Amino acid sequence: MFRNLYKQSGKIITELQEERRRKLLQEQKQNRLLLQDLKRGIDCCDDHNEETTTIKKRSRALQDADGSEYSLQLSEWLRESPENICDWILVPCPKGQRCLVVTYSGRTEMFTKSGRRRMYFHSLLPGGSGARGSKMSTILDCVYSPGEDTFYVLDALVYGNHELVHCEAEFRFFWLRSKFEECPELSVCNTYNKKSFKFLPHYDFENVADVSEAFQRYPFWAENIPQLDGWLFYHKESSYTYGSTPLVGWLFAFMVPDILGIEVNENYERPMNYSNPIIYMDEFDAKLSTTKHRHLTKSSCSKESDTFDTVEIDEEENMDEGDNAELCKVLNSQRKLEIGEQCYRLHVCEEELLQ
Image 1 (tube, rainbow, N blue to C red):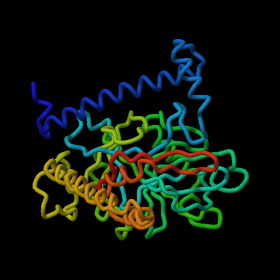
Image 2: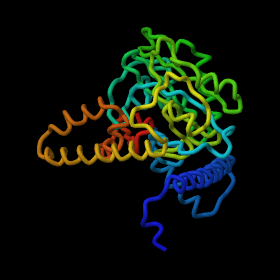
Image 3: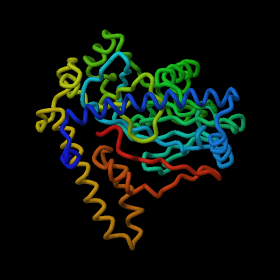
Image 4: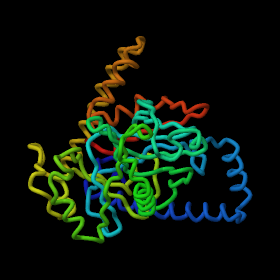
């Protein structure tokens, strides 16, 4: 009767995670079918038609087909090996700053996870430079590495006006890879492409040899540039979900043997305080909660001054992403991005990279 009042055990949390995965996959499949019917002109009930009309009337350039504002997809801890690991794709994640890269009206802009525009420049991405790209738009989910001045592309929401949010992850990755193969100049800095864009490798768990080789590689990138932060796990059939989702998992390299039973290179050393992956995850989350409370207390004391906007936010964006994830959610809950005459918000439910 009072079970919900008690802290859930790791096993219960894992069971809830699996159940949420199944439910989300089913909902996403139904949404994709509904969108296909709408595009084919199949009539739905009157109530839905009224809703669709309302969405179209208020739609903006940086909203998806449902009228929702584009925002980042965030992962959850992978607390246990999925029921069918072959349904998943492995992606190495470099250390860096999580961001969205947006092109529109012939220019390219980079927005941090907190929703701040940090830079704008020309690029060879569709819509990223010149008058010819003024009617094109692209939105990429990236990790920016300041040391290499490079954007490492995790995913795509829109590419050349083609919306990919409702496409399965396996198709999104295929699409992105093909586009980068068609335009290798994206990885080279020049007059027309001021920043380098590099597509991250992907490993299908159906190919055991490739996955094992990836886990055994150290350093993962030549000369350890960039440094590997951890591993992302994408369910092949998942749509791009705004906010945190159990269909994208996250593990540090040293956790992989305990969670998946797959050996990694011995150079991926465990921290001194690591004894059990679930305990480590819970302690990590508790640390985030403490950091959030500390900064909220500090910010409330400076509410009357402009220090909060000029100093605290800069500190927030220079800290490790995992240490200030929850802080980002609160500090930026009211901040919007100005894109020409349009605006949209990067909602941060919790930090995906959990660094």
